[in-house]
Amino acid sequence: MTGKNALRFSDRYRVESIDYTDNSKGFVSNMKANYGVYKANLVDLKGDVVYVREDGFTFNTDAMLYNTKSKIVTTTTPYTSHKGKSYMKGKELMYNAKLKQMHSKTVEIIYKLDEEK
Image 1: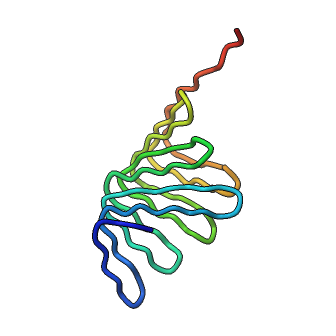
Image 2: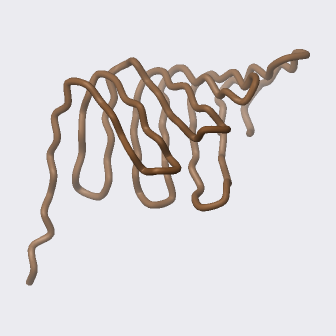
């Protein structure tokens, strides 16, 4: 975890321009935001949040909560996700990074098929 400015409290870290990388077994994911709080295995991100996973899955939103133990990402704000040329927009998202499973509400999906040459 890095950032521009940080405050350390007895129970949490508060970081401006946070850049948090989870380098767990099986995958690497990176999260950036204008502001973040790390407390009790939770990373709470606010403002221009970008989540990038090493396999190319990416999403942008205004607020996100990441559980470092369960590897579950949640947002209750509108988001846009991308993977390759395909993208999805929705109003809420729950993404299990371990299982690569996603649940969302009110979605619009544009899926680009690769055509054989």
